[in-house]
Length: 270
Image (tube, rainbow, N blue to C red; front, side, top):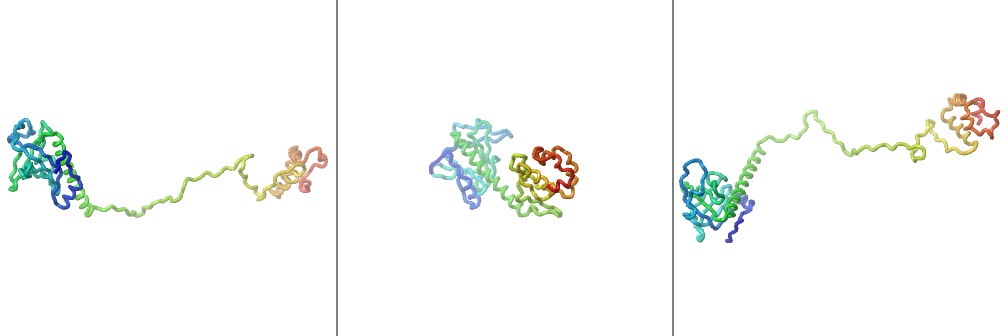
């Protein structure tokens, strides 16, 4: 098997390991050193400087595997692959694997045998990149463990927890606006010279456009009669003496002065 510094296994394979309960490889490093460490005298952090780094007690390879949610750090012989020691990890960071305070290449590992006995040993990598890959592989695995645990809890709460009520309460209503666009402003009638149409007169008829000559007098008279036949006398009497009406009816040169209308009867005869 070829050894790669970035030999990480995809999280999907780790998930398959949890479902099928088979062991998958998370990381493998060809060179690792093991040290006997002195007993921990106090709660202070471990220091790799306290170890005999130049004379490791054992040298071999490291293989990190996962079975379900548990990760295993296995120390094996480089040639035969015989297991030297292993440490089950159920969390990281945790008691089973701790970092040292003075280096990123060394860790303290709690190994266990088949009888449940445990011991603390020091492990270290000659290459800083190997230590980084080892750290990231464990972080990725336990990140998946956390997400899987939260997903399982959410699924259980979904079955027994309160359900969302989307129904209407008593007296509650809802308004839907369907197909209602923005109201358009009504076109305003245009003035003289435009193309807008004026509203029709109250009589219901629209007078034809005026023509030249004396026909203006007849058209205006007919329009007045149609607009209000009952008040035609009043309108004529109040304006009979007005020069404006006289000029509008006919020019002074074509109509004799004595023939101008004196009362409403003459208007009707036109």
